[in-house]
Length: 293
Length: 254
Image (cartoon, rainbow over all chains, first blue to last red):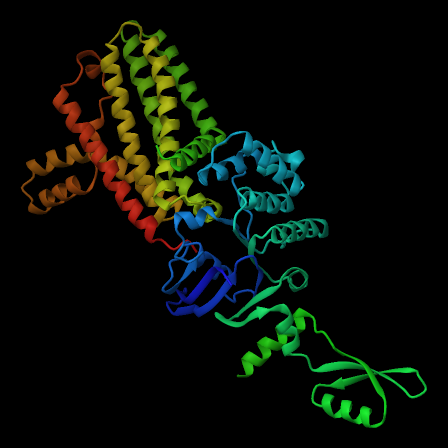
């Protein structure tokens, strides 16, 4: 499995107002496989944005480091393959949508030519901003700013896309649009790493999760594994001797015993379904377990 | 020039000319220009001198406004509003952002100066040689470039308000350095002498670039004085740029 991003023992601490040092990242490790759509979950203050800012070099890593596409740190070449949208969409409000995209296009070393104009139109249409191409960004609503932020991040077809809370502050239509863009890019093979605390969206989109809590990674793996690991109850359907079906809810502890018993009683077990928890429940459970350790 | 630096410079140029503060500043300076023409017309003999003094002062103030007030807030605003985040996630480096900002803001000062300076020279008609007038304008521009780099540097370490006041303070001290040195040489105080020497070494001597005088317009300036002063000015820009780059590179953008 090829790795797009690997974080090794990343530590980060800040001096707070009273002069004490607060450890924000306590030597975190995780990796993002190429082509995966990975969600980065944590409550406010867990260290999500600090992790992303460290990865992008806005904050120097105190200890540890990271590799982008097998290269140590974020090199100029690595930046060319990267698209990023920050949490707060504060952009130059004196620019038009077209000027904003052309600035980022030029900063990536690409020439303003016919290809740019075509790409600009395609991307603006994808984020539903075609009509606002020549509007100043100060005329944009928050949702529109969020979408133009995504447009600048995907303009150059990056190999790795990092999005910090891409759905926050969007109305339902905007969220669906952004989710569709993410799904579409993922289908085309783009590696996506995005943070959010909207767990419903994460559940819908991601195939992998990295969960951070109080500066420590408490889970890294597939969404399916996370669900199964914590499942406590199963729904068992059995066929009675008269042919009617009966549904039972069985605890994990009693599962084997119930199966044996029902077989002995000549019931036919037709299906056993793990009672799927929501990601929210799994997340809360994981944090609770971690806190009790 | 690096295309990324050029993109940032163009963007900064665009930011300023679309800024209301700059337009107000420009209107004020044009108003002052018109006033200098009217006042000049009222004089019998000093027509050109009044026009020159007020006109060159107006160009100088416009440069101060652009470099200290707009320049000082430009990079700080970038950091406070976090607009730097999308820029620095591209191959753009921090020194490139700093240099691009400098070039963009300085270009505004340069274009405004050329425009207003050209107008002023035409109004002055035949008084003074063009080469001497260009020397005066170069002095203003080199001084502005020092103040701009100083404002950018200060905006990385202090708040915009403190930065603007510190830049204005250094601007005044830079112009008073010659007087300070003169009085220190007359006073019998080791402390005063030491203080003036210290200031002379740690602050740019802006008085050396102050050629805004009718005498310079008429008689010109020796190449040695001109060359040494320009070297002094550019040297300070380079020193300040290196310090600003080191600070910016080490700064955690939280």
